[in-house]
Length: 110
View 1 (cartoon, rainbow, N blue to C red):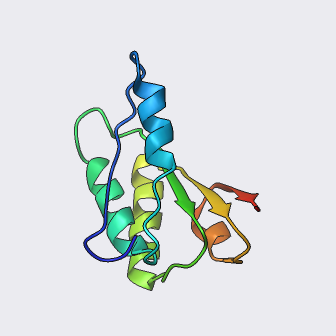
View 2: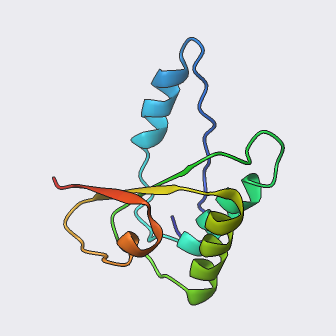
């Protein structure tokens, strides 16, 4: 979400893990999207052992700033680590730039 409102979740496929994931996915901030901070945290995770081949899933309502420096960083990781980013766009906002840095994107309207 916005500044100082970041929550991350590590998927646990053991008992209760999917329930926790569903709780996490239902969380709502109502405060904008600090995409550069979220992407930078995900890219930093890529440097940790065991996460080098991890994909990134971005779920957004489409309201986010997109900086050229963030795009350059994403392209760097895509070229070096074969990073893949998948997007889920919820709601009715249109953000064509999501298609620029995501390998694939799905739109869900409600």
